Amino acid sequence: MTILNLRIDDRPGPKYRAIASALAEAIADGTLATGDKLPTQRDLAWQLGVTVGTVSRAYAEIGRRGLLSGEIGRGTYVRAAQPLSDLPMRPVSSAELIDLTLNFPAPGSEREALRAALTNISSDPNSGALLDYQPDAGLPAHRTAGAAWIARRDWSVEPERVIVSAGAQHGILSTLAALTRPGDRILTERLTYQGVKPASSMLGLRLEGLRMDAEGLSPEALERAITETGARLLYCMPTLHNPTTITMSEARKQEIAAIAMQHDVLIIEDDIYGILLKAPGPRPLASYAPQNAIYVTSLSKAIAPGLRIGYVVPPANIVEHIGSAVRASCWMAAPLMAEVATRWILEGQADAILDNHRMIAETRRLRALSILDGASVDAPTGSLHVWLHLPEPWRATEFVAACRKRGVVVAPAETFAVGRGDIPHAVRICLGTPREDAVLDAGLNVIAELLANADASLSMIV
Picture 1: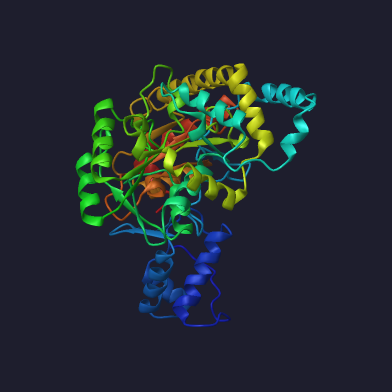
Picture 2: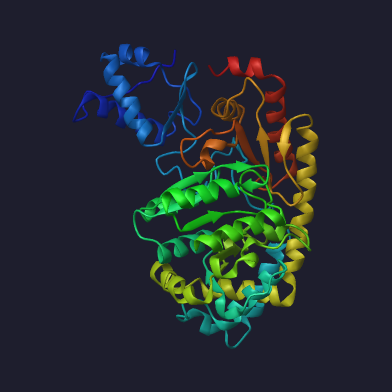
């Protein structure tokens, strides 16, 4: 039985709220870690000297805060998501843990390229202008570079439609802020990029997760949701979907585009991973419905996450609206970083860095498939992560807990779920976070051992 040293006597208000607050603090400070199993309601009631009904209300309260998950017959566990759970994942600070939760490329040649770019910029007599305020959508040269980068996805866009953002997350937030009002319903895939959840919550928007199949978002589910809810905005990731790694076929993209045009629905296409596929890769969904789509991409997964430069391409009639949202949120993307990105794109360094990252990603992908041989995984070429389908008797929460006890951190499917529908027992394993291959191998070997010895591993965490 788990013993929790919760102090509730000196807390104001009803007992159940005092218990909920004490549990929340224990989760926040790490006393209770992700995946830890809580005492049964009867056991905790006995420990605290309260009624079972009081503990039941406390568990319900903290469950509403998104901190707990439960399965009938298995117990109540600390969720992977913390009080700010829906924020995109942040690095795990402990040096003793192997963090496989953050999805970005392994270090490549970008550091050397950065030193050269900053040297060149510093010697440019006009570089001081980069310290001034700039147009909210970006300097013309920076927007032209964005159009050139997007052209690598076999889609030509006018530079006048390109808005420079402080990364894709900022592009998504600015787009939602420009096009919605509090209370609006936003459609997404049932499993979606976790960063869209806090952005929607901040703006008072409601997310509606839609059924997916082997090709991604279901057209039938989309059309039904539009009809039933009246929603007029869809966020989706058609290429190398996060977390499932699915890429829609051309036919599926055309179906989704046709539905959007028929019902006058706007699509926010997150294409942050599409560039990782070697040309000629699949065309973006937005290219099939340019008047009904806002295309969002960035350099975070292809070049470097800390560059914080992204590009948003809306229909011409709403460019100004989204530009205004950029101005309201940060005034403008950092001109110095946009200048680095522009020089890399126009002078060829971006392609060299991208090719280097593709090579490293493919090497790591093959290493992962080798170590996890026999497991049910999705990890197509170009993917920076593995989507691992857990075999019986594993459940995602238990597997995350077992991994953490062995020093490895992975993300459960629940982190990406929208709504209360069926959530697969699966975890996302990111391959780019460890700087050294040996560290990645160590983490993957722990996962392989847990899969091979499920019964023994489960007995250690229940």
